[in-house]
Length: 138
Image (spheres, rainbow, N blue to C red):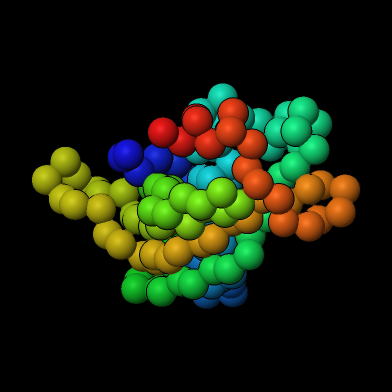
């Protein structure tokens, strides 16, 4: 499956005093991309919780920072499933700076793996991802 792509622009609220994206905000960008990936598959996080009694939660994250993003940069944030289990997914994610021209390649800024687990929303205990949800990832 090809990686899902979500565009994000860097705003003041995303940066530190030097106009560089604060390192923890890449986790926020990755979260937005995963949420929009689910939405593109026809899965609303709110509806999942209401209809199935379960939800995805982050259980692990590992990031590598390569280059800084700066105020007003246009980013492409990707999300792709690289491992699928019965109760969790491991996602590969990247934040790339959009190229300035058609002849340039995007610049890799940050990449990582994020593991999301399925839990019962009432107890927060691990549970199996419903088959109807898993089928959307095929």
